Length: 173
Ligand SMILES: [Zn+2]
Image 1 (cartoon, rainbow, N blue to C red):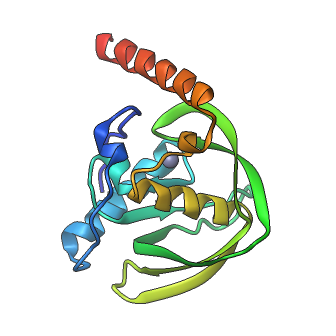
Image 2: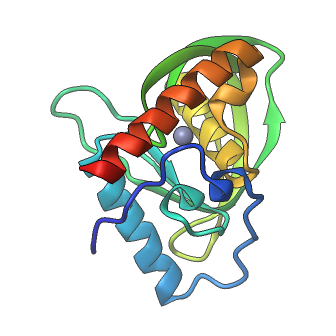
Image 3: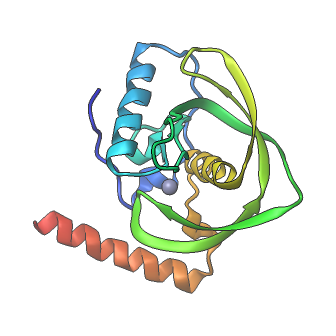
């Protein structure tokens, strides 16, 4: 496993619709394992393939937060929300591609997701709470959508300018 570089917004690859996985092969499994390592190291609770520059419908997440609890690394290929609750939830979201910027985003409180796992098998599960927010945030990445796209234009532009500045500073150092 190796850590990959996380792209910082704005980047055209973060605005691109990713392609479906056709075959869960070794290369794809190493990508997922690298993404998990990258996510845990960041640290973060979710990471989508476009964030490491791979335009494939793959994401990883682990929203277990309790101190000392078993981690639950999840790998999803071609994830799809197949049902969502009418009830909505607001969470303060952040993103590894938009470091240190947070904003409230409203989404369905519960979702049912179907995906192909690291084992190549189809899985389906209901998610609630932070897991529901996280999986929807990550699936958005596969459609070239960021959490700041839900914000008012002024707020979005402000965050984007901060990120442009951060990228300039990083390029210089
Ligand atoms: Zn994100």
